[in-house]
Length: 629
Image (cartoon, rainbow, N blue to C red; front, side, top):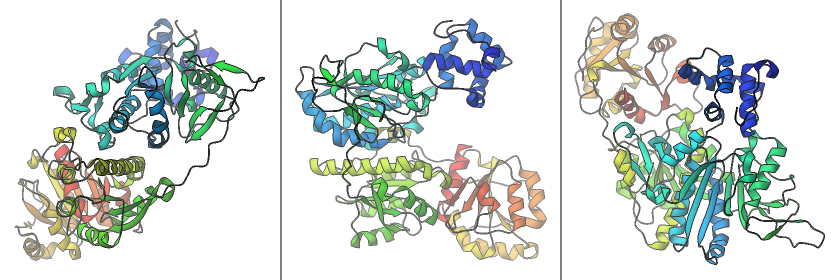
């Protein structure tokens, strides 16, 4: 077969090991028996497609069908990437490289900055570079053009990159200032996807190219090469060979970026480390006895020992105020925005009113802002307080960015960017996105001041995806709230957040069967709507109805009667073990637990919850779930 020798499962120990060996020989990526579980998992769908029963049968199929190796490479190579990954490199490119590179490129006959994304996967890195250069060259060097070449060993990934189509959720992670109006929403079957416009596509081209076969790759030299997060899959001698080939395709004054966790030091490549995993040719004179090599440009570049990066000059951290009524979120933000990362949280506030008071006495550079907060929410705060000179604001909130009523209003009222926090448990994973968007919001604000430009507002793509929240088929859905009667006043804040025709609502009381009618009367006054308290668990309910039921005597009968509904469960405060048991019988339901702070005791419901949120977010989180179902 082409590009891979015939390997038997017996000679390699197992079919999975033999299959991994084929990919290793084709790409250089190191896979062995320790990766068998991963190989098996990724092969499952392909086995089904080909109607094959086992890895052994698939191994025979690969050996008999030469073109299948390309599909196999696509299955077993890693495609984990996202827009503006490892933003520290983009910052280095902006602050250290472009100021030096622009005058050099201006002196050439062909005034074009050339960049190679040498392990481009499905194209997110190449398009990130295109957005980045389009944004910065517009003000720094509008007379210069740029070209980006993206290569990858996997032909299927290259085809995706050429198409330039990505799910909208991927683009949401990119800084708004960079996204600009470079993307358009799809229609029909791809209405949830975005496609790169010609303003990006005209600057980018993609090719299939294997990093271990670069010796025959003929190309004009590049000013910058990104080859990131791929060397972790190679042996040291392969890394040296590949890096040598990359460096030979750099202009003498060019820059090579590898992954933040990767290093070329100690390989004797004649480069020096000048930043976070950033390398350039060492600027040393060539002694008479020193060997030289020709660069791709035809100039002579000295071979010199690797030198350590100079000590970076510490910049003052950006001062941040975080506005959120969740003590747990504030604790996590303090772990994400540290001085080591270039940030310092100098103030916090629980709502918009507190935030406005803090700003009167505290200078801050940036603000994170939640939407759902008591007294004054994030949208209300922006409408009242955001004016010229206000610190840039990045929304960090559980509200979907597509929400027309809330998210679009926030962006239209002055917010520079938006981070969706899908769940409290996932907020830490959002750290890089939050830091990146804060930094870009700061940079964009400085540029706007210098150019006397107005605030950006909601983007074209944000408007294209904005939608109104509406719960379809409310008669097939259900909300339930578990609470203690001392918390009944909190119910009003929750119910007030529901509008239009809503699913029926069941309020669960514990051990209150004899007093249900009286309690229902009190709750009706609190909520401003009738509250029904039937003797038996209702077998049918109408949208908009509110019921008060006894958990002990009516809970099981009610569950059996309504287990086929889409259910959203809200738990206020602490409930008894019996109530927790009852909650957990509703398999498949959304479970939202009140955020009582990082010091609150762990319990079964918190561990099982879809999310842990402050009381002010209950109504929205429940509605968002029921709208999707």
